[in-house]
Amino acid sequence: MPTILIVEDESSILLGLEDALVYAGYEVLTARNGEQGLKFALQEKVDLIILDIMLPRLNGLEVLRQIRQKDKSLPIILLTAKGQEKDKVAGFNLGADDYVTKPFSIKELLARVKALFKRAQHSPLGLESYTINNISFDFKAMKASRHGKAVVFSVRELELLRFLIGYANEVVSRAQILEKIWCYDIESSPTTRTIDNYIVKLRHKIEANPEKPRHILTVHRKGYRFEP
Ligand code: CA
Image (cartoon, rainbow, N blue to C red; front, side):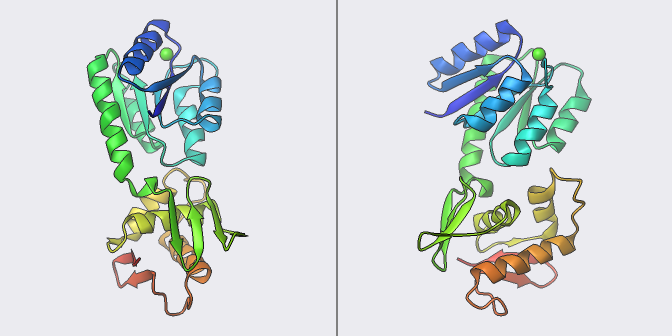
């Protein structure tokens, strides 16, 4: 069964959630402050996180931001306090998948958890492995190898490739790529030109003939399309 991490400092909510999730059959990990939550999120095998925003040590939004620097696809539900609309918007901008406003019903939260797991299975960011031209990609470990020897790709290149493969045979626009692959990194202020440069790099690494790509195709005025 999937493991769910609950990060919440209020005991009554934490224990109530833990009980309900265990009863529903999930493995559950709990943390009572942001620091511990972040540590578990990055070091333990976690499939989904329920993350409170108001937390001691490190607040939930900061925990979310730091998780998203390392992992773009881990499903995260935020717990927000009533009337904190600001937090909700900030949370979505930082890459939260869903939010639940306190006080919430356990039933509602369970439904959100289920929906998110379902969505994650079909997400282009959820693809775990793929092989092109003898290069095996392990998107969970963010590594690539050819005949057992490591091939160097940056994490961003791998994320972009995984995204394109996830939408195989469909055109993805540069705007979509910016939103999904670069949205959590405003500091590097990416432009559509940045994407084009990454595409060129990817083609050189995976295409037999990068000048005449067979997998990563440019669709004039629209974007890119991955052909398996
Ligand atoms: Ca709290």
